[in-house]
Image (tube, rainbow, N blue to C red; front, top):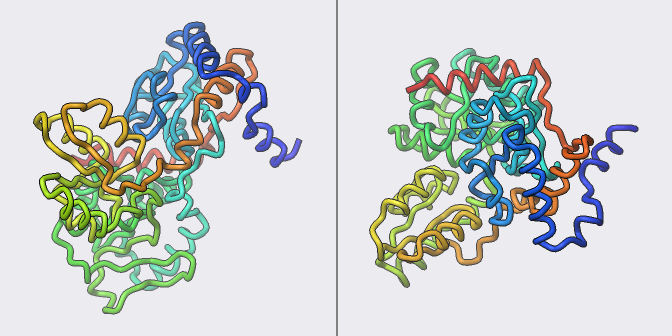
Length: 367
């Protein structure tokens, strides 16, 4: 069987599961969870559908869930309800005796796909020709294992939306400038908070292999990879203007993956966890327009009936790649595990995992 046959076999959902009712699918999941007990662990990302998140043993952001996986040494089988790069990180941080599975192999991340290892190696070659050894690479955890490994091998670290300021501050103490992959918006918003001017930030275009900047080399402190989140980039200044005009009493909170001009005009910005905590700690009757993924916004609306919550963009759709994980794929994956014929295992090459661990480890010790 060739590679393409293997991918097809692990991707196409058998018709059997499409014909089952939600109740029947839920019974499969409950049965398998009961059979495996502590040997099975199901982490669920905040952006997952309710039909999936109801079965999650833990919920959180990508890195937090990977850390939960690493801490849960009793679990032999980890069925990660998230996207590919998250399952990769879980595999990197867990032991060789633990196996990580993804219910649907098509669950990727458009942002992570905007920086592949070949583009990164070529970009690094051209940038170091221009700037010498004055650059330290950083990568958002929303990146492939290969990118994390590259960053780790070059002395850099991973970042999350929660700790980006601390890690960027650390990096700028190590070298004169940083290369921030793959989300330009998180990199720009973080650097700006640290007092770095917009005219001290350049953008690296990995398609054209060129630096977008009008000034001189010595002026550049931050090089931003030209990537973005396809969900968060859809929140606009117009959305904010509409809220200010029609709901002036509402506070606006957005994720730092949004564009700079959106973050600048909002009342608050923060990581997924920051957004959740802000809503939880707010007073009854408070009003919020939230600029982040729609599954999470809907869950916050349901969880806080005492508050008025809307999406900042009323036409926003859930993250399409996150939504690849559904009840049918979860039931299929678990039932195949029960049969002893597991599918969709995520396995990171040992050499790549070693470099990625360096990047993750550096981040985890930065205070």
